[in-house]
Length: 385
Image (spheres, rainbow, N blue to C red):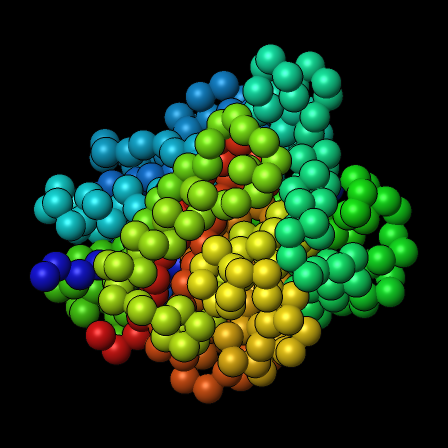
């Protein structure tokens, strides 16, 4: 069976909009060049370029036309996908497995200051939620309310899981938020949308990331440390429904099920060494524990309270700091894949979880579309297979 590996990456460390100091094409060029240089690969060897971008976030119409050449797409096949970086990775993997490409670059950048309230309102349904002014804060608050109603989670648990992410982000040199906010500070921060306070909702981060995928034969020639993709899955939530229905995470459940089947994972809590999860608000991480099969239904808060998802726990979640620490609206999926690769190759400073062999990486467009029609993608990454 054919295999695909991640062979290199490049990152522009994430920061605030006022500090990034580059246009999107400049940032895309910088991270792509870094990724190529790490494996001594020239741009003419690239077969395909896939960009994770959205005009509404880039501040320019047909923004991919500006960024594609910067990622090495001159006279090459290229495409743009708006659902996030791991959806781009799925397309890259499909291209390699089909034989239409041997080396694919997936690149993305966030350098243009964005009004996320406006953008996320524009993604709501045009009949009910958008005219009422719904944005990501309101929908996240309603989903968190469902979590309180249907599980044993409390507002203290929401603050605690946020603090875990901020602690991990403080150790990550590439992360945006390094403040290491503690639970009491998080809980007492300004109320954003009950029951979520301001520090429990991810804010936009600005930076860039590129990652290179290659076929099995080529990967072994380019690097001694390939990270293999052994499972992929995508799923989409219903566009409209009750909050109880939308909080069921049907899209993520479908994506995880497909990825687990492909990778041969029977018991995620035991088979996985760590998880890198898109968590645009605190309660979503607890909700995802159940959806991903890391715990029994209704027991997500217990899993977190027992320390299982801490860096030294049995199934660490968001060692990188998660979306609360770094939330590139275009590029967070690419960034999260890179974080998993760094951890698996022992390149992530301050991280000691032994010798991880298998990880799950998740991405979603919930950070811009909030909920309703939100898409989810899951990759299973492995070493030594």
